[in-house]
Structure formats: structure tokens, C-alpha cells
Image (tube, rainbow, N blue to C red; front, side, top):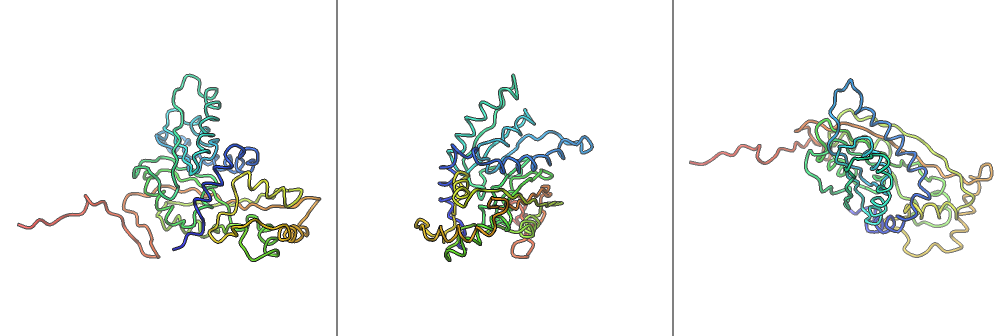
Length: 306
């Protein structure tokens, strides 16, 4: 299978965006805040759950959610994981300023790990809380990544994720379609595809929800600048490798104008939220519609010849 995304380009784009990401990431922080409200499940006294020991923030970016979870559970081992090393350096620097005032006298600080969400370097069944805010839109093989999440999550551990849905930036997609035939906006999985991938991986009791945010911009150029600041540039393998010429950009800008409302060009962001619980060992993973049961090698009886 050919990857939809050029993951080296994804890494480069977010590496370049690291120092200025916070200047344009108000939406990302709002979505993270709404996603983190669901962590209250773990603190419900009726559940009688022990505080988490290992918490992992996948696609942590500049580390806001990582630091907030370290504040929430000061004795937990919290790891911020990201594909872009400059993002992790920025997170480490910023968290050093955030956490002393949050946790006076507490030495525990997050660890930062440069790794790919598609190949987590974590032990099987080791994670109590796996959190990922607006990272999975860069992953084309959702069943595979959820199988990896299921592998590292403890039974009854909490998976909490968000991603962008297919209605995201539909105005921009349609405007550029008037200018040329090259793809300019990434494809995004639907809420049904997202839920199916979670169920296929065997997660228990998945719950999904969605929001729509519409942000206004003065013109197409200002929207494109914001996307570059966020690192949300076109990273598809079949993207146009040359610069978008003035004439094509002008045609796209003209095609965008009918969307203008109250003097602003709208940009729609569809956000999908999901949470689920880690399954018990031996729960099947569905591969191509077939149940596949994973059995550890030491659990397979061996008949010895005499």
C-alpha cells in the first residue's frame, strides 16, 4: 500500500513550525481542553480507580497537554511524544517554566520522546492513559495505528483522542479545485471510519462525538500563512512539488470569495473526539473483517517428542 502522506515532509513542516506554533494554535488548545475534560472519568470516586502510573501524550507538540496532565497527576510518569525533535525542545523549555509554579517541591517532570505514532517504542500493556490531540489526521492506516495503541495500553486503560474530520477546510479544498487539479488539502477520515478502526482494534465501549469550528480570515493569504505557522502544510505524496503560481493562487482566491460572510472568509474545522477502554488480553483484532487473536509465544503449548 502506498502511503497517502510523505511523513518526512510532516516531520519537516512541524519542525519548522515549532518556534511559532503557539502563535496560531488557539483552536488546537481549545480542542485539547475539551478532550481533557473527559479525564474526569478517571477521577470519579465511584470507579475506585488508582491514579495512573504511566501517561503518554502522542503528538504532544509544544507540550501544553503534557504539562497539564503532569500537574493533574504529579506522581505519574508522563511522556510527551512527538515526531518533530524541535517541537520537543520547545516543549521541554516551556514546561520548565510552567511546572515549578504548578508543583512546588515536586521533582517529577515529563519525559520527552521523539518517535512515530505508527511505531510506539513502548512496552506492551504499560500505559494507563494514552492521549492524542489532533495528531491522527496525519496517519493514513488507522486500523494499524489503533492496533499499536491497543498493544501498549493496559487492560481498562483509557484511550482519549481527537482528529480532524472530512469537512475540515472544505472551502479551501473547493476553491483550489477551481484553480488546478492538484490536491491542496489533505483527506481526513470520517467519524464512521474512525469508530470502525477503534472497534476493529478491539477497544471497549468507544464513544465518539464531533464539533465544528468556523474561523474567519481577511483573505486567502492570511489563511495560508496560519496553516504554515501551524505546520499544517500539504504533505501528500502526490502534492504539487513546485510553488503555487500567482495565477493559480489568484484563481483560488477568486473562487473563495463567494464564501465570504460579514467581511471574512470562513475556514471550517470538523473535529472528531473519541474515548475508549483497553480490552482484556486475548480480545480479537479484526484484520480485513476476520478476527485475529494474538497469543503470546510462551502461552503456546509445545509437544515434546520422546
